[in-house]
Amino acid sequence: MSKTKSKECVRVCVRCRPMSPDETNDQRSVAVSINNKTGEVQVKNPAEHKSAPPKKYTFDKAYDWNTT
Image (tube, rainbow, N blue to C red; front, side, top):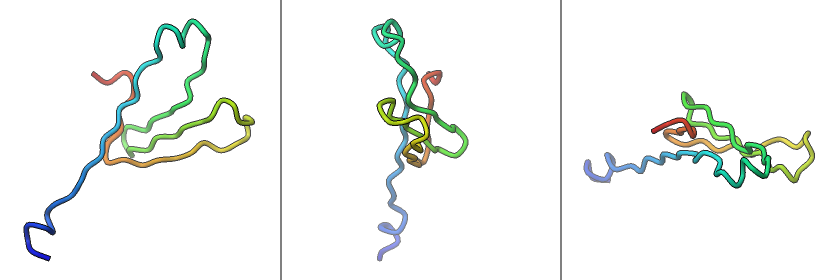
């Protein structure tokens, strides 16, 4: 590998959007939790049983709905 190739990398950042007014009016629950420090995103399927573990994803950077 050349020096140029070894320095190339892809960084993936994700931002969770805030709930829409329709989602809030329908009293839907937040299905995503974000750890800004570790870049971990946990997604809980509201249709699954409450004891079902959330799916976990890790990104280079993760931002919650309060981030501008």
